[in-house]
Length: 104
Ligand SMILES: [Mg+2]
Image (cartoon, rainbow, N blue to C red; front, top):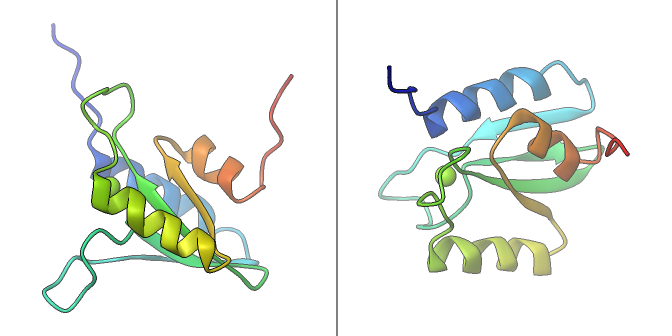
């Protein structure tokens, strides 16, 4: 039986669910609309007053990569002082936000 690919949407939902438990974090999903800025990351919010921007990609899928525009947008946010990163799992998102130690 073929393994079902994990959809990016599922990862986004899991990340939001996990982060919402933390009272020091506010997280929002950015909905792509005509009035939005193309290429801006999937998730944004604040952790202890630091703004963050996280682009979510499918896990275990080498075809799921940042587009040039997404890379550019993340770099803009980083240059502006935001915490930025690419997450393919809840663990990735926690690491980006410094909420989980890397196990040795
Ligand atoms: Mg994405």
